[in-house]
Image 1: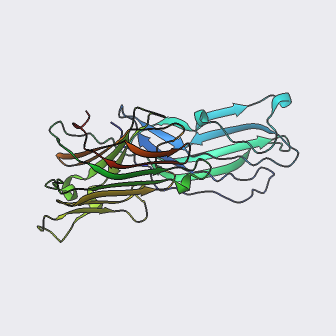
Image 2 (image 1 turned 30 degrees about the vertical axis):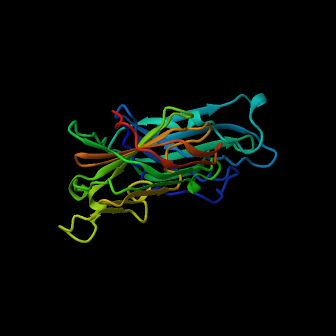
Image 3 (image 1 turned 135 degrees about the vertical axis):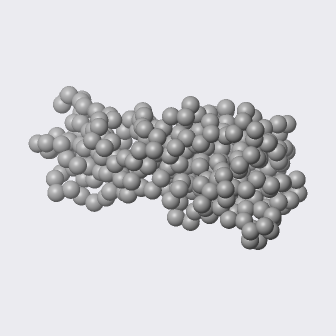
Length: 295
């Protein structure tokens, strides 16, 4: 089970004193289904001086080499260069904080130059779901997944379930929670976002038992801005920006949403009435409750 928390970033920008400009570098860290942490560098473009070609670039994390790209002079790529996905996802140590640096050199430079930096990337501690979790299946009102591969900061997630079947006995102010988005179709993503206990509050005050609300207005703990659990009324989750870890190159239908809080889990499966636009949008509405919660 994944439990990613892609944390606060510092984006480097502006021109260097040399000829290679800074790339707008963003990075985060997530936990894989196997419980290992990985650094993820968002898509970036390395500016190359007019008339020059890229000779080499390196990605480093806390000084350690992550990726080393070099060409011979005859095959150096001309113009600005955008690395492939394979050059942007790397093994990391859970609980450790990283600075990711980009160093580049084009044919107009005598030596490599600092070309971008992302700082303050702390890998989360894997979150495991207790074996005694109770699963509650719910019908889904709406799921919206939006992506913009060239503008990852515009990605968005919206989940809504309006139902009088919703129970909310578990207390996430003590245990925290996780939100998992998973599909075995399309690009086959499986991502879990950590929802720390400190960001949960009871609705109606302590002891009111009307539900709970999670808020992270500055997205300091990950890409999930808000989660609302109202007993007998609704479940809602909102996420945004480039730290949402899913892609829409192919239709992901159906998509499962699993919200765990303490010893409770709420399970939704979205399919049926859907809209899909590759690399842009997946939307599903009026989904019936699944037969059971997945493992």
